[in-house]
Length: 434
Ligand SMILES: Cc1cc2nc3c(=O)[nH]c(=O)nc-3n(C[C@H](O)[C@H](O)[C@H](O)COP(=O)(O)OP(=O)(O)OC[C@H]3O[C@@H](n4cnc5c(N)ncnc54)[C@H](O)[C@@H]3O)c2cc1C
Image 1 (cartoon, rainbow, N blue to C red):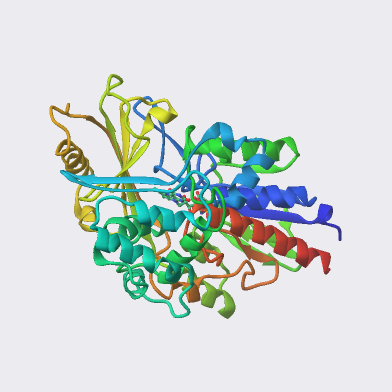
Image 2 (image 1 turned 60 degrees about the vertical axis):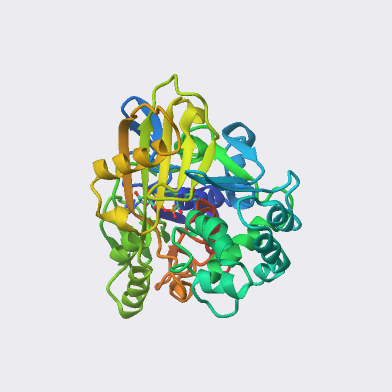
């Protein structure tokens, strides 16, 4: 049977499922994507709030996102047009306290040393200690452990862990360094400082759906593929040859579970091997991200596209002027914490109070909304690697995509895109052997 004769069902139209679909299309497969939501994009999708086009959560991409940038270009999106590229520059404040770190425009392997040598907001002795020990950060620890212990063992001073690595770890992994996997953090640092431009920040200037999910859907439909939104797959049934989905008449040769791990576990059949996989998928756990949207009005002066906080509950503040909403700020609250026990309104008021402390005569913003994603990422705790699945499912013809597939990366858009690529390559390889 040639690739053209093989029918592939992809359950989930997030970034991973759509990347799988695009790659399989390029290889000649007939694909059908089934997405439960009203539009594609999953955990990185467009959202409308009170007349503004926003996102389910503020996202930041990196220059190191090779697979993401590549698949965007494949479906006709020019990354230069939809992403604002800037060398990594962090400014975190709380009252009078300011921490700053910049990387040189060229980036690359020497960029980290340059950034540590020139960072502001820590004492000279701490800066030089961080710099002198920076080489240790390039090595992947063989034994996983809390990222905080690893950073300390790598000779990073406590104040540098608090002001630099802590906020970066929360942003990249969605957990504070005391709860996060050192191996995941080390992998992010390796990728971000691997070569020129890799550590650049890519800030979306369009909504997340326009970056890839909607163009990908159109690209697939133009090539005769099927993309059904508002279609939740509730059951999978093994047939003598292939698989049947409750929402379609076709028998599929291959089925890709490109959902979050919990939904994938629910869809697996009831045999022993599948039950074992389901247990692993459930054990990946989850960590939340909340995004607070505050509207200061269109006359609010422009701010830095992204700035950080050394206090709580808000961690990163993005000016949504970039996406056409002047005066609107997106404030990100990543990971577990006391904010989970607060009502939406209380969290929004705490965040606006936090921002007001640093500026005088601040108008009270209108609260546009608080989006809580309880299962934003898998729980990036130490040892999590051993629970991640490969692309091969428990039964022939069952495959996984999704950011929880073991790419070595945390749950990110790039992890999702790479998993999609790996999944498509594995299906292609499998079918070429038949
Ligand atoms: C608030 C927030 C902020 C984030 N910030 C960043 C960031 O700054 N940078 C970054 O790189 N990453 C970030 N991430 C992570 C990133 O969004 C995810 O890693 C990525 O989108 C996961 O894509 P995916 O395709 O693997 O999964 P998903 O996006 O979860 O896609 C799975 C899809 O499957 C669908 N589905 C589920 N069950 C069924 C079913 N039974 N039938 C049909 N369809 C089904 C869902 O509706 C969903 O669309 C953030 C995530 C969140 C939530």
